[in-house]
Length: 117
Image (cartoon, rainbow, N blue to C red; front, top):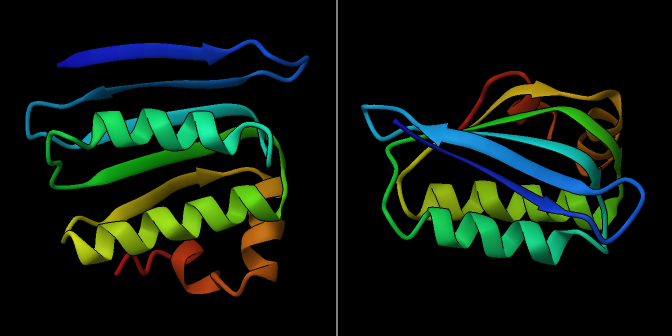
């Protein structure tokens, strides 16, 4: 199992990405801080680097995301679409109230109910 901890200290509510790759290759990633237009590019770069090695599944724990705007929600939906295109499910294992609201507004209720296709 490998693990990492990457922080973006560019703001008061820094984006922090931690996680590990389990023995079966599944990536479990926890995101905390702000998932907004300012932090989305950093998240995108980190996830792209991690997904160079294919994963059978990507699990996202977003319980500690304090703020999420439309750019953050869009990035999550694009990640889900990438998973569908490359045949790996992106599973939401936990979401904060902020993420839940944005995903509801973007029409992703099915994803939050466990439909990871």
